[in-house]
Length: 305
Image 1 (spheres, helix red, strand yellow):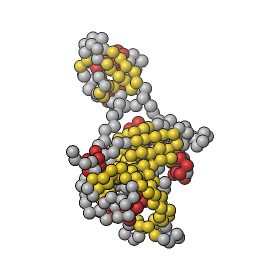
Image 2 (cartoon, helix red, strand yellow):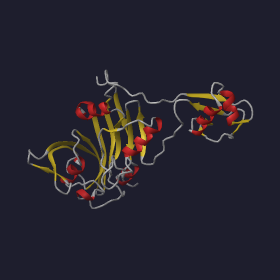
Image 3 (cartoon, one colour):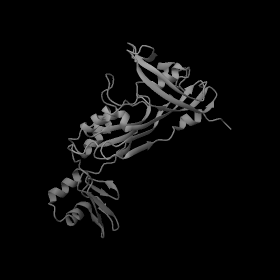
């Protein structure tokens, strides 16, 4: 198993101790009395850098009032930090990786048009809060307007191992989408060779020297009007694979103007990576992550009563 002999960087972890307030006081005197092994300067430094929380919230004010029954927490490992970003949700984190849910519209990584607001930068800033020298590495990507699950690695060797042996480690990649028009078959597997033109548009080709094999399995779950809710599993991870395969069978994904959609009912590409299962390259554990279907997908394809 990968990682047996590789060097691991040890990231600063929480080391929290709780102190109960028994009489009315203010924070600094209480801390100086409770943390008798630390100097006044060291106690003030803990306050300044948000290592102290009162009733579950980080505080920096030395004169914060305390009442009997209050709890004061001191994190000796790192500052208290609650990650809160509307575009990214942390699903899992350990010493090796961070798994997130990315919202539609957010780039996975920077491009020529946008260098700052992307999932990579957001997650890197998050891990560097715990360790200013921490690095982050991209394991794979999702299209900007596709929402779903992304893996980032904190360890370069692990990232290289995962990317080099992606098909071995990744066991399941499933998506839910809403298509314009209803597929003629309720369930089918599409195989084609994909390539890209000068306009960065992907398409199927019969030229085996240019194209790369892409395999997509789909199943129609339900329909309403011209729209279908479709469950998709991919067995290859080619650029725009699902979007191209749906479009080429006459059922483009709603909101996907690049590949022939005529409508944009949700004001987003209606494609969502809802399940990702993979073997953890270090622990060997099978990791399973699942997300709910976006409510707008359900509403658009549910018959009114």
